[in-house]
Image (cartoon, rainbow, N blue to C red; front, side, top):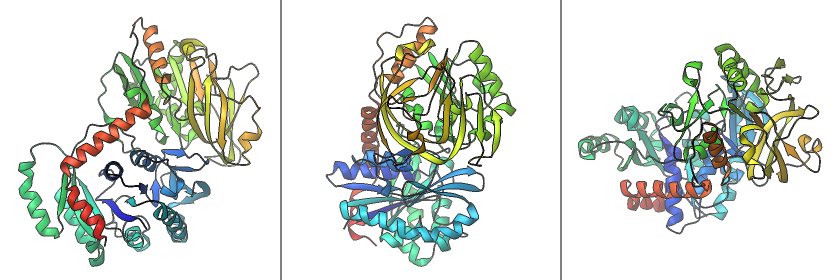
Length: 512
């Protein structure tokens, strides 16, 4: 049976996911067969596995770091918020239904056997399981029915490393306060403390580290630096949204809608020199980009209404009329059509007009399409004509069924599917399956990850530069999968240098 270690945090975004990924990489480099696990993940960034099941992207990233393919057992419960008080509940990769926070809180204990079944399957196949917690283990109003922090640690007999974020300030209060709010048997499970995101001279911090160990009676097993690496972020707390607004040679603006999902679709552009990828939530921030991207969203209709109210829809329409490139993915694609209808109340219900930039309409259905795809771009019109024939891979996750008007030009041809059985979407597609639509300089697709494959993002950037009369020459095509491998290695190297890996291996061997 696998040995286990669990990473918990003093708060959300303390760096649990990154520390867990780094440990997965280190154990993998050291020759162990390692897998990540998170019993319950709340995130709008999700992924479709090879067997057509949906899981959170944080565990996909950690699986990549571990050198293995992602499996839904690594994240048996995924909560995708639909509003401020409710979520779509996904269990073992399939939709269970929508629940309010109160209803889910009352129901979740019934799901714990499924969590443990998934954990035991991994435990039988791997030598080490790196478990990630969620939020804080010291949420005293939630502890009684916890299935993701100390409740999971007890069930998995996993020693815990507690991570605090010094970049936000108050890291000593974070760590000491968290430990003090735990029950005595829970404190016993914490075998090491980690101070994360440190910048500066560590010798100045050393007296505080000594006092922290004295007050908690737990060793500090590392002070991890603020690492400048590019790996996928879990959700909307990402620091990507707050990065520099400096405009590059080619400037791409992503509309940061309130319920943005799968923004990792656009990470490949960040790896190309001279490209700025900015997330904007107001007309003032938009400025004059070379391309505007409408990303995926968990609530297309409400986010379109948000854009309508704050003036961003009008700004996008004005940019499109001026010939700017506009590209919509999934929910953003749906927004670009003529209408959106929700007769069964999948989202907010009713019918609203879309932006009218693409000749298609969308009806929301009760069944979710979960599909992995491979294909190529067809003869796209306008500025991105150079994409014709370029191969891509990706996946679809959506509730809507989109119908093109007669004569509309599809954007892509799908050559290969891996999809769930009995899909309603599948029954509506022909043998020569196509996706998306293009009209002049406006493009839309359901395919997440469409820019990931080597050559796609580069073709887009070259086309945008040419429109400005700029010759970027032969820019280096980025193999994004290979690029991510280098980032995982950098992450592992940074953690090896600043964590006491000898002590962590001792904790792993001793267990609880």
